[in-house]
Length: 149
Image (tube, rainbow, N blue to C red; front, side):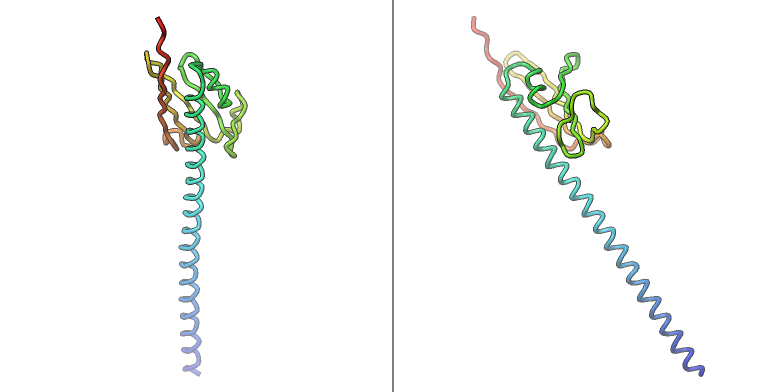
């Protein structure tokens, strides 16, 4: 009878060890899936940020020397005092209407700087929950027309 209880005790110890091993393996797999999801989400945000910045650069280069026309093309608003264009995006990267910042998830700013023969646009895209870390930055330049005398 004593031999039987030692066998059942050994079986319980093996069973507890197997359950512990599977619990640790489940925890590791869960962490891997969470990290993969976060990496995928950051990659998607970066891709959409690059597309938005490239779109802004193309609108800047294609438009005349009128920042309000660029803002209109991008669906944003031009602020004359700071010389920048702001575009707000929702969770699905669709431009939000001007003044509706409740659903804002991402933001793009286009800082315009005019020099005598060169115009520069510094484009920055970031998520509103982490405004200190830009998703993507891009600088676009275009030559200005030389005035005829």
